[in-house]
Image (cartoon, rainbow, N blue to C red):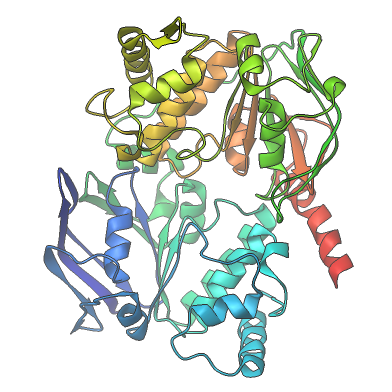
Amino acid sequence: MSDLLDIRGLTKAYPGVQANSAVSFSLKRGEIHALLGENGAGKSTLVKTIYGLVKPDMGQMFIDGNLFEPSNPQSARAAGVAMVFQHFSLFDALTVAENITLGMTDPPPRRDLAQRIRDVANAYGLPLDPERRVGTLSVGERQRVEIVRCLLQSPRILIMDEPTSVLTPQEVATLFRTLRQLRSEGVGILYISHKLEEIRSLCDTATILRNGRKVGECTPAEKTAHQLAEMMIGMELDRPLPRLFTPGDTLLTLRDLSVPTADPFGTPLRGINLQLRAGEVLGIAGVAGNGQDELMLAISGETTAQRSSVVFEGHQIGHYSPAQRRMMGLLTAPEERLGHAAAGTMSLADNAFLTGRKRQRLDWNGFIKPKSTANFARAIIKRFDVRTPSVSTDARALSGGNLQKFVIGREILQRPRVLVVNQPTWGVDAHAAATIRTALRDLAASGTGVIVISQDLDELREISDTISVIALGTLTDPARNGSLTNEEIGLLMGGPRTEAEHAHA
């Protein structure tokens, strides 16, 4: 295979941060090439440079031996570069065809475009109805829209950023078939993912970045996932030890919990029943948009319900506020790090105060106790290895992994009786993920009941004692971890939505 894309000495610095430092590597035709590294290793800056979103300080790029200097994404697309971002850029209220039209410089007539969408989607095993409103699509189908939008450009280079983070195993298999088909047609694919087993099965080669520098290259299939993780972080990674689970008393019970959703494209909860025992890690698997956010809001108290539908240590608290529930020991860490779990423009100390005020006694007669608040923030930073200059640093200045460690650590150090976390390691690197998962397991070992809502089945396999599946606002009965295969769980995750699709058709 000859070089399609050649990167030579790419360097990019921001104030106080060296994002990329003399990075060089090549992507060949018909190759799936992984970019591996921790959060902050420089992967995003690198692919944004290739896609024309970032201008490098030094270095050169070549496509087919010709100098490649994209001034913006439009010029990158004109050179044959396409990118599917981790966060979809779609409008729920518009149809598939309308969303795709918005991303085209010179779109064809609507009827012609609809047929082209069908043709390309079917050719690559990604069937789509151009007239479906995006708000009615599953997450996997939304990703199809983004991929088909790229494929309509007939790309020579395709960049994929965390493409499987919200997919069922069946949807992952479909995506991989598409990527392998593109590889066979000579397309070069740059692939970013924290799911190392997927890297091993899919990618031909990998470039490893650390602190903005290239530190190695390997053939992923020849390494274990553990070895890849250690190459990324540059140190040995502790292996999780098996945990014996002895269920204790019931701490949290949900009884026929049914609540509407305020989101026009959200999913109402329908008859949710759940029991969480002391010392238990209950994993809840599901594709995004099936009621996970609504479940978190109902448990935290941000959405109230019938008094008897939420029972905490024998008390009916369905009508209690979040503050009342927190005082009792029912703590939560929502999925959205910035804006919900933390205020980006506030310091880490102030963010520690926001949820720790009462349980950590961080105020007196309505006045903040600055020393106690700062000490609490420092304890979180030290215990969870949060990389930050000080407790005065704004939350938005932290990398995703470090902010997530801070958010989870803030709740754990408040010694909850029950902790509910939504997507605890979404988008974070292997080292940060291992820190968070170990902390959750240790918390359960101390007698706390833990609920982990996650789209990562490998994560749930690693830390859960029991696993339930949420789909279309309903929750399955829990099964002992290991009693169901990933494929069986995947079918439960996608089944109800498939039925809904049939009804739509």
